[in-house]
Image (cartoon, rainbow, N blue to C red; front, top):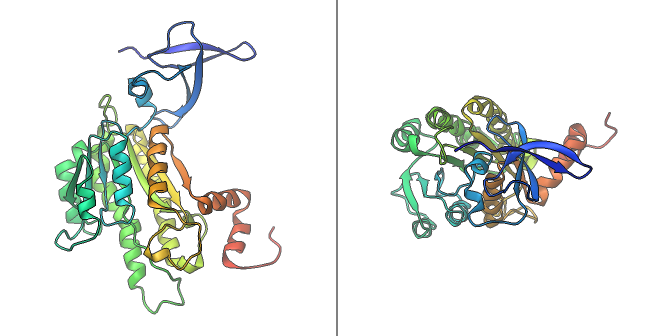
Length: 321
């Protein structure tokens, strides 16, 4: 199928060259959207003025997004409080298969039956802290994973001085940083090699990261530090996957509605809100998205002044240059 590119005359009689959706007839009115191509460069695409049946299935549009529809997806942690909501949202978005990682399958957990009840969900053994487990699963499904959603997180309150040892800190790094690295080393090469496999090629790698990766939250100081490490690692991952056309999509969240954030006051991010933002970000082909009032407020303050935000987060006062 030829790649459609055309000239569109916009307001002010200004011509622009853009990608053209397959349902756009020559000479018709269009609406313009901006997206990132597989190299990460911004492009424009002309869509029909009104939605058409199965418009999102256009091969050219799918190349500019990471739509979960028809794709095989790995969700890394079925025990996470957001797993059911994410799997449900991906299934509703038309995912062909949703592999859900399950560590220590012998140990029961409340959401297992609910996960199995979701259409197209398949539970698979996966422990991101165990390199053998990660590589064995990659050997089985690495060549058919189109989107990987890493929702594995280890969260505990506490900073440095209020902890008597490094046990929790090690666990935070094992899951939040080294877990990501193990997944990337095992699944990344195959996904990068399948970035141009046609309509249902490998498309995206999603990381769910605390927004406190940008500026440390002392009440969760060690967790924030592990999130910052993961944030930095995703920048390297993005650079290494980009040549294969794989989008690295970071979803930044504030406090989530789970047991470890119970002491914090609202607002908190509900699993359904996180899942909705995740699917929307994939459909729009985003690289970064911020979920919840806390995350959006923090990133705005960070952009305005990182040092001032640090002072505010740590309770310091005084002038900031």
